[in-house]
Length: 71
Image 1 (cartoon, rainbow, N blue to C red):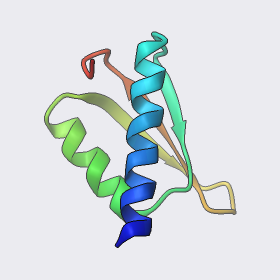
Image 2: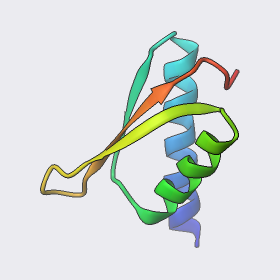
Image 3: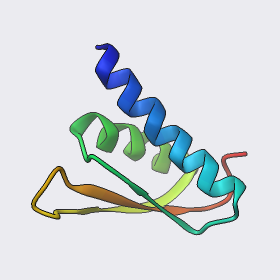
Image 4: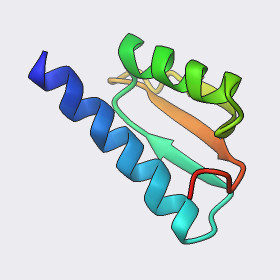
């Protein structure tokens, strides 16, 4: 369970840092079911824009569109 939480908090940190820098997109890796579920909830609530899962034949990555609404 700890590993999952770390992956989640890393993803959230990446999103938060990108928003602080005014970026429109952020790349999150590795891609996991937990992160996808988490991002889906965030998207439904309007905290982030749409995201795309990119299969790079390794762990995969997720491109998240930012809305600037997280701060």
